[in-house]
Length: 416
Ligand code: NIG
Ligand code: FE
Image (cartoon, rainbow, N blue to C red; front, side, top):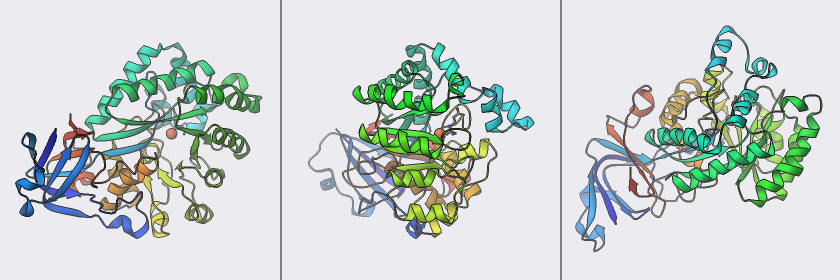
């Protein structure tokens, strides 16, 4: 079955070269086509072009096809959200007031709140209930234009509960139209009973959890919360090395709370991405420049926790790519709205709308290892698309930060 989208006011983020990422100065240059058409064949973008050149031949002997009139509307690739924790139980608005009163993320964590709070609740939640709660978040982000998402474990912190989370992620992969990548984050926090012997917990992650996770093929990537008050660079080193032995490439939490050395250890192990990275200086930028690691900023967490903002401009000016993900989780970013993340990127990080578009599509696709199949308007890629409401320009998307401007979402060629 083919679908023709015609009279598109502007088709944006076209990439004839199908680049796997966009970096430096190129991030400010968005390739677009005004008054365009786009043809979908099954799950794939078959062709696109200008309405002035359109004729029936472009449909390739196809008699029956579905037609969508996108007059006044913009068509773009659906968002890729390369960093979330959207499988979790309940919520943590109880800590919200504590934060407003002035307690820091670390102080809340030290009191047994934070991640450990979510872990306690998750242990008591059945797998089916966890799936249902997570499924409603998946539906929410699809309606907000997300077509691919990475989801981490890390609220289990025991073999049994980590496996429960990863099985829920697998079920979401099988039952929803999203492209989903799964990351094992056993080293998200140290359970209270290991407080005085953190290395013993690291041993459990490496020797008990990891082999089981890998044996059942439940993870694509491995993550560690490498930061002050959580896991040290040495512990991260050990976990990543073990993960790689099991075929899991690292994607890590780094330098959110301090200049913890997380970026360098990520680069050392050829991490696909280093994420958060509020504390990034010249040395970190240099390390990233000589790497295949995607620097990933999580503006929702920095906003919600009132943290310093990562130096996105310095990174882009130095020639680096930058990705922007939501970090959707109950403690530091209870939102997976990627359009809102684009607005944060523009206002708080001084990224141009063009840069924010690349950062939330092709660069996040790279950061989850799928930029060969999604993240731009390119012939042969999956038809994962957003059709907006009637809007004036694509810059209007991040500008109108509180408006839901997503009219239609198409995932794998299917109009949802
Ligand atoms: O990415 N920084 C570590 N982990 C999550 C927060 C998890 C939580 O607080 O529940 C994050 O921000
Ligand atoms: Fe995170």
